Image (cartoon, rainbow, N blue to C red):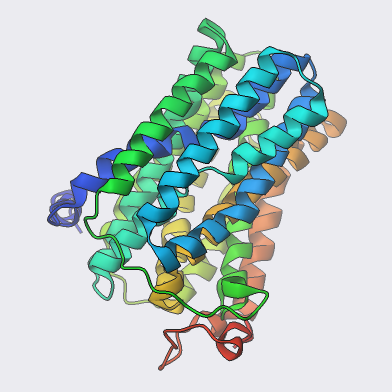
Length: 416
């Protein structure tokens, strides 16, 4: 496929009538999403002077967001996006505002951590709801894979731009000012997004009698595990790149190296999303995870800045296609009436993976040096590839997938 054909496929998707009405406010709302974990870390460290306390608060925000986010998605599936997002963004504004006030007053660490958890739990799940709108509008067509590529590229851009904006505001002014800016963006973007009804799925009340809910549907937990592994790549690379560039005497290189990883991911997502694949998505997922394990292994051998650039670019080229494939599979696996909740499970798994990968990599750096941080990605993604391969049948959609979740469908085995 030529570059002209690739761009045409994206332009065709982006020319879908009305989509820009929700894409623009969604981008504004999602930028602070990528600022939240690092923002809480900087804020609590600024308030307490302790990186340990800051890490605890940031972890509390990440875990609560990962666990509560799917419940938000479930409510959106049942009652509609608008009725969920507007009260949620109001609660988030209250929680984040309280956290800023407590940090400015140098409140006890325990109180800061609890408030950080409430802040993470109330983050509006705009990204999952955008994907639900794309699936509602383009579901069952080949263009949906390209639309999910657009979302993956958007995620990469926000996670590249957000830390730069956050650090600039934090160092130029203070972490309080940085998170106030984030709060303004998320409130404005979410309110506008919630009031735009273009491609918004209609509410579909369902009876959810299974305690496990959507996570126990066929293949969902398996995909969440794969996304947890992919999240660990992002988290461990942030720590590994930062620590290795510092050890090599060029700490300023950390930003450009990570930017190279993100840029390569955007390129990989562009090329992958425009292709028309004849290989089943579940097979592509296994191959992608295995390739990601091999690609990230190159980072462990990077002993110089040029080698680090090359290894980061190689890993970046692979990761976006794997993420796109996962979202494509889950859209085909779950009923439409729980689609948003399923997407939020994957989003939350990535968030947990980022926190876990950063934590593990940090411990390895402290005890064994910066290069050991890069051991985490090939191990986690390699294990994920083996797990998905052994249970690959559970990622094949059933011929007559139920549209309403009952206790029988919710307890379907993920092993097929």
